[in-house]
Image 1 (cartoon, rainbow, N blue to C red):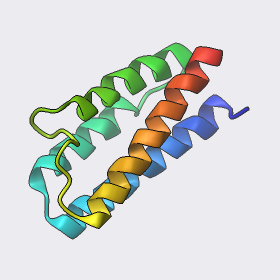
Image 2 (cartoon, one colour):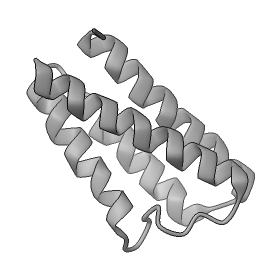
Image 3 (cartoon, one colour):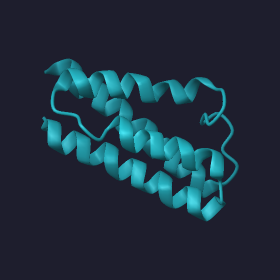
Length: 97
C-alpha cells in the first residue's frame, strides 16, 4: 500500500506532466488549471486532506471552463488520462486510511 507521500508524489508528477503538455500545446486555459492543481495539492498533510483535494480536482472531468472534456492532442490526452488515474488512486488510498 502506498504511503501518503508516495501517493502525493504520484499526483504531483501527473500535474508536472500536465504542465509539460500545456507548454507543448500552448494551452493558456489549462495552464491556469495546472497552476490551480499545484496549489490544491501544495499543503496536504493528512489522508482526509488528500481525499478532499482529489475529489475537488476530479470535478475537472465533469466539464466547464478549463475542464478535461475536450483534449485536442495526444500529448494532452496522455497527461489528462495520467492525472485522472493518479487522482483516482489518491482518492482510493485516502479512503483506505
